[in-house]
Image (cartoon, rainbow, N blue to C red; front, side, top):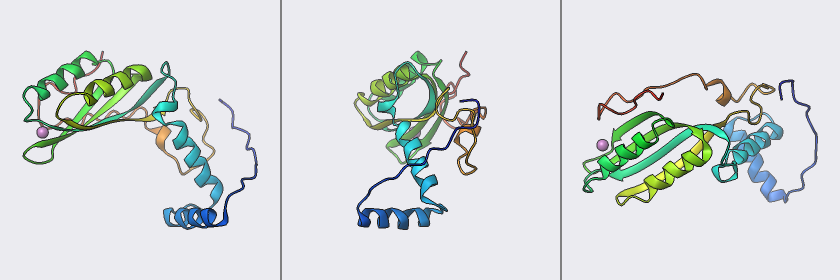
Length: 176
Ligand code: NI
């Protein structure tokens, strides 16, 4: 998709009340028209991690909340991130309260590996929440086309935020 993509027009049938709810919502969000709102919904749906093939190359985040008082959990989580050091680009750690930590891991790699890491984190005792969000698929939709000025997601692939200012010193080591 190097060239500007062809726009296809098509009709959608929808119950009136659903359409009215949708229109009210997109006006609130600042959309000028339904088409752009629907395109964004489709793009979001296509980035749903479960719909992306395991062999695709992607970037995204794993967000997790855990209890750092659970015996060796912080060590286990650090070990895990070292096991996936090629996929883990950066880690941001926030001490939520006396007990809980919020961690955002920026990941980039083969989707099956990213899923594997998320699952290995999720199953640890003391991890309350662990979710993988895929925000960019390499060579995916519209990788090189810019037919709409409102979406900026694909302009960010060269920004690497090393946001690991606080906490454990060995976090966020550069991947090789
Ligand atoms: Ni903490």
